[in-house]
Amino acid sequence: MRVIAAAVLDRRGLLLVSKRAAPDVFYLPGGKPEPGEAPLDCLQRELAEELGVTVATAEPFAEVRAPAALEGVPMWMTVFLARLAGTPAPAAEIAALRWWPRERTPRLAPAIRDVVIPRLQLAGRL
Image (cartoon, rainbow, N blue to C red; front, side, top):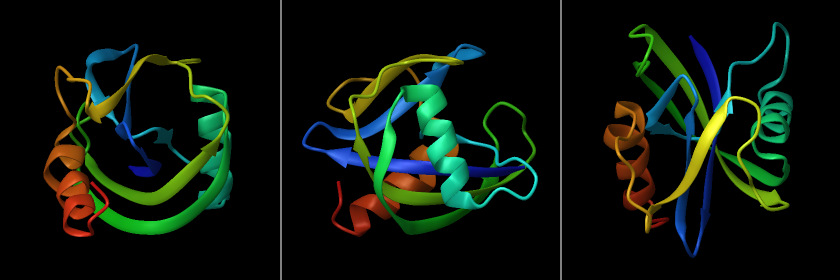
């Protein structure tokens, strides 16, 4: 499964979202690209649909290969460090958003907990 995601960081921490299908599991915002869709185009589309924002800037950060939290299938996730234009608010299939670690989350998706957050910490971003 291919996923494009944004690591959005500010003074509140790392922006995470949960989906209506699994409201107790938090992920990075983003989603699956459509056939032939470029990664940045996917990121723009997904963040507009899910959070009502646009991507002001995005730079490649990490390629993560891990099992998908819900589907249990192999996942290849491209993570961009992104800055947003606009104020994110849950829309489409998004149930909630949280700023980690400032706001506690019931459960982090394993790829976020075990790979993305440690890499952000190692890079001095968190």
